[in-house]
Length: 116
Length: 117
Image (cartoon, each protein chain N blue to C red):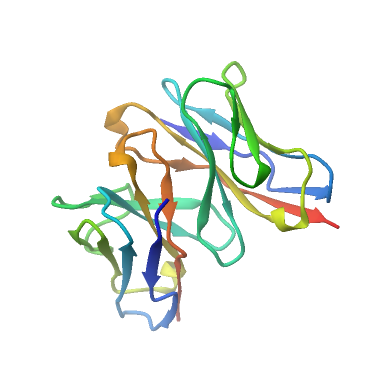
């Protein structure tokens, strides 16, 4: 069965500093990986995805993520955090095997707080 | 992307009653999903609703409690039946474009915040 772990419930960072949100996954084959952000009282917004190819994926709002197969990780990064990046971040995985029904499995979420 | 609207945005209901949540998408999509989210917590998939077929429910969710309709490619409803305070949650509609291939991302509606008294 597919699963995702986000080991940190909350990440605090000063504005202008690098931001990293950690994610590790478990699937039977090669994973499809996604990052979403949820601002207060809003739905989830898609940030980026890894399907295949270059291990470094660039997404919306200056975010990027690095796929590391040996460490089964897909950490989200931003070189310089903004106060407006404060939100709840979710990592998700989909098993590419068709029988999985395209189901997305979400991690527990990491709350990011960027302080001015 | 996809523009998804949900009605109502929030509601406060009495236990034992039922609430139907509507999800409208701005374009035709094959796959629609319904999730539940406790505030600040992760998402749990309730069911997958594909047009022209019965909804597929995840473990722990049953059709009698959460009946789903999918009358066309742009609309779906989720009913929360015989509600109890444990049903208080945010209910999110989600769609997958790109023909429903495994590589395409899902898009989410703004959610319906339900409080059951």
